[in-house]
Length: 222
Image (cartoon, rainbow, N blue to C red; front, side, top):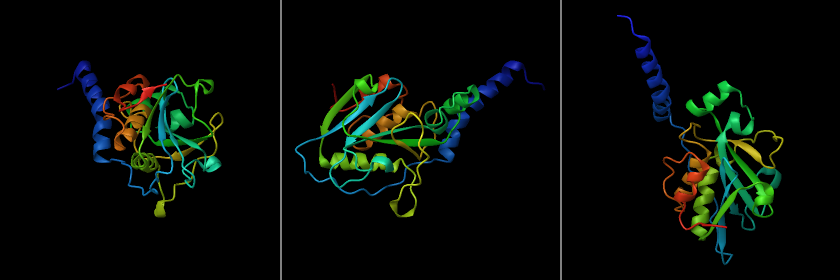
């Protein structure tokens, strides 16, 4: 019995829609636990920031003296920005239609981006919004562990080698855990890392940068 064109189209839609979901469930690429030094309460206050760049968000954390979690070109920066995304779209700026389709609907390789800052990014740097809150040393330690855990590591807790510098980015990109899909994008990553530190609700359902603020706990817009 020959299938009608409508039935064939329905089968294709089911495969396209359900295939990636099944794949990431059968072959998950979850972050591995990473041990980070405990942040001591050497400051009266630590402040964590969430920055909206217009279409994607990132987390900016203070780096206490003695810590070295920045990118290799600014490893002991006063502040470290962390973000995550699709390797082709985010790092390589590949906007060809077939690559955009793969980015949205197929499980694709991801990268974690780290940038060092001497201060917190503001509107002069191109951000459209910023939220902040104070955190305990334990919460900051948990957030460091979550962000660092998104980077692929070699044995001995050493990061895998960074990618070569990319024009237009002050920081560096690293091979990351997790498949990029439209329901598991850069903005959900931001919320998930904060959630792992007890600073946000679950990131499930977050796709757009405009959805991030509603999931934050205790943050205030600046």
